[in-house]
Amino acid sequence: MKGRVLIIDDEAEIRRNLTFGLTQEDYSVVSCPDGISAVHELNQSRNKGIAYDYLITDIFMPDIDGLKILKVIKNQYPDLPVLVITGFGDERLMMTALAEHNTGFLNKPFEIPELVEALDELTPGKTSTDSEKEETDDGMRESISAYLTIKITDSENSMEIFDKLYSMPGIQSCDAVRGDFDVILLAQAESDAGIQKVFSDVKAIEGIKLLSMSQVERPKLDRDVDQFIDTYQKAVKQEARTGARRQPGTMSYIIVDIDPDSIQQIFTTVFFIDEVVVCDVIEDGTKLVGMITGSGAVGKTPRVIEKLSQVDGVLRVREAKVIKLIDD
Image 1 (cartoon, one colour):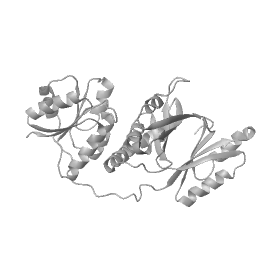
Image 2 (tube, one colour):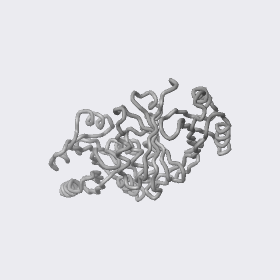
Image 3 (cartoon, one colour):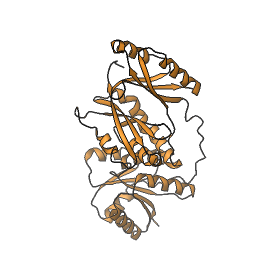
Image 4 (spheres, helix red, strand yellow):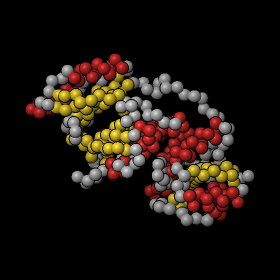
């Protein structure tokens, strides 16, 4: 046998053709229709002590695009040869893919001999067969976070009130917004008591009405999906989060009311949208709070909101545009 291959492609016909063709060429093949199922397959195989010698992934898929999968898998399995395939390739996509170690790029359509040749050009390697030890949550949440929404009732002193909120101890971010409320705060503390103190301090400020305080929760996801997201968060999203406020264009918060039974599908959909730089779960898994960035036309509904409104289990999506009052 030449090697064990995992294929990720959302088109059933392509999966069938590639599986049949590579099997004829003496490869052992498993195919997956999307990124999440591929994550499950990689983790289950590792737990069984079974290694993959190659990964073939499409770029454009319904849940996680192939370049994001590539980023995480290269973080977890740096020596695994990966071949990126696409029918909509361009120079930018190709260069992004090839920047990763031991990665090839092949435009559709292609014949099986071309595919085998592209695999042969990659340096041999494989996934690990060592099952990772169970990780605890100790250290994964070094602090407790909560979102607070505020209505300013004393409009004449609104700037003074905003400055006071902005400079308060325990406030990680403070944004003036247009929407159902005037200010969104993100508070952080080392304990529940610390968060409650921030809550009390904010509530004591004159000229405001505290509309809500919602503690950030860890989303209830399958263990291997949770690990995948955690790796992607560290490898990609953290950089986007810290640089978001310096990016040109507009920024908004989105508040998404969801069916908690659909949280894994909805959370992963939101988390892996490029414009989303923050995605947090609140209120017992019934809401997501996200921060999006972009440069769309004024008055036009952001693409992410249009996309989310069509996802099964999403009940309502609200937007609160950030108003820039203080230069960071």
